[in-house]
Length: 165
Image 1 (cartoon, rainbow, N blue to C red):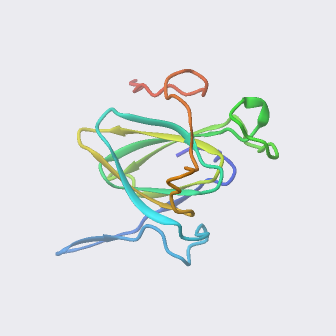
Image 2: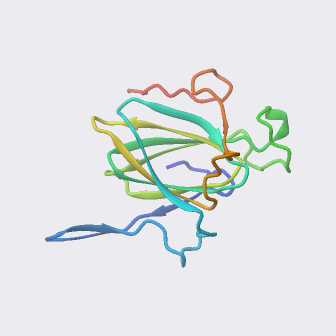
């Protein structure tokens, strides 16, 4: 996990309760400190090695949890108008900072991604990664709350390649 988290990012360890029938894992509860409001819950997936990046939301917070497989989640604090990503508010004290998380079967955590924080993820491992996202706003089909950038154009200081060593 990142040593200094981007302002507004919260990591919640997820409790897995196993028994002889299987397991249960609570992801997000309305009495959690990080819970704001309910918009919708959706599932998305990534095949091994596939990167889905970059984007941010102006109105919604995301809450990512992986329920199968492993994912590399990367956040970039784009909340500074001088960075050129369309942000028009007060400069974040962590603007320009990158956080990297590995979540899934081997690390059951939930990551809260605040609005205006650029993010993306990559499926890692040998199987499809299944992500549950609980967002604070329902998806608006007519005017999506999503601004996108290409994953590999160098505008964000992050390299999605695997780093062995």
